[in-house]
Image (spheres, rainbow, N blue to C red):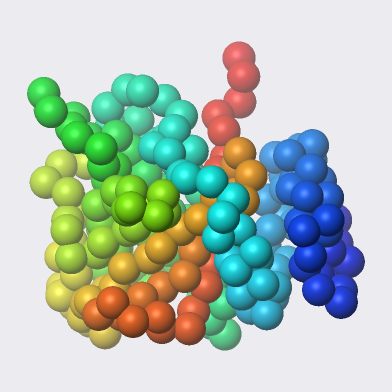
Length: 200
């Protein structure tokens, strides 16, 4: 599935709607792999195009209402190396979980060994974007997740310190994000595609 046709010559409103329809009707494998073909320039265009697409919700990231149940989002970022990754989310446990999610970045084993797992807390901002804050590390996690690391553990300070991600909705399964460092745009982008568990 080739997505470039929707961006040539520009991602206007009509092409954006066709782009969304194509992703909504594609199967999980095709949708995930199509998203991973996006270039940096296409991610920039998509992030700008969906600014007014509507507020995100906790359900977009974790459809299950149960605490500590994992939801996997396959991702690709605009960096030249180690561009494929996953963000894994769950709902907090406890009597008052609030309007937030917990999660971490599931990366290549080498990356995780060097910079840690990039644990975070995510919540909605006033613009309806989901904001991931790597300075706020969850106190607990699902049993299958790796040990919680702080953003400054190992060489993590080079990656996670001062980092937040601002994520906007594209479709039911797909979202697009931009990284900020100390509140300023860092110039890197990523696309996420949620993988729903198989129906049994």
